[in-house]
Length: 372
Image (cartoon, rainbow, N blue to C red; front, side):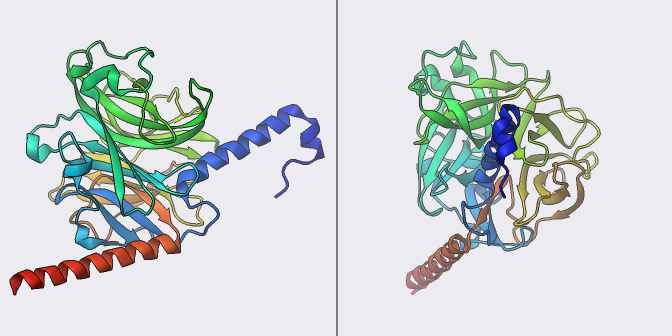
């Protein structure tokens, strides 16, 4: 479509608006689907209820999923989650060039520590969605772990940090590094410092192109009460960044907020348009995604008041509003937990399926060998 015609070239304001639209659309498409290739299916990358590790499931329609490798760990969290040996809240996406993949997880093992405290996050990279490497950041160590030691500190005592929860990623091509390089991965997460905070707030850091260095935490959201599990998506329909989030305490549900800029400010939540299907049951871990070829949205979330807990998906309009038609995610209900969704090409989908089949076959042969 030709949108920069003679009139827009001669009108600098209109030209700026059009270029900004193109720019924002490129951000929106970055993580939504493969660059220049058709979407074929969906990867659900999530923490498993069987243990604090990352698992995979595949789907063709975005609702009915099949576990890969029987829902076992995609990688060994004892090796790649170096603080506590546990990985929760997996968020997966593509790199800015679309050629490889990134993941962030909460480094935490409630099963080992028997507390709901943790101290850091894991940044992971892969070229094939199967083999992963990681860098772990233990926030208790303070300014020394960050790549901008001269920047202002949000805390006087980093060692008192005892919650670093649910990190997620957005590529920001406008971010400028001190050396003049442009572009960074905005990683946002909740923090709680036992000495200096009254409640959990949402912060963000920027990771470099290598995904091995991050900046010091910067405050993103403080509405005067605890907030966790933020999920931010750019919505082409209205040109805004939309936030889904869990408010701790008060009215239950998943609430929404918007901003014109990736780093806010985010307005206080809309108390009239939120995910409220579960009534007084508690829910968390929202993850929004679009179906292939569809401008409307789906929002997955955990309803954890029930025993066993449920993983649900509802529909929303193209503005990520007007939530409706909730139903249970199919195929992995017994193990589904906080996670994220990635649109796959046919090649990626088949590669993961073959990897799972080979691994299951190898495990079966190994077990037979041991029993004999």
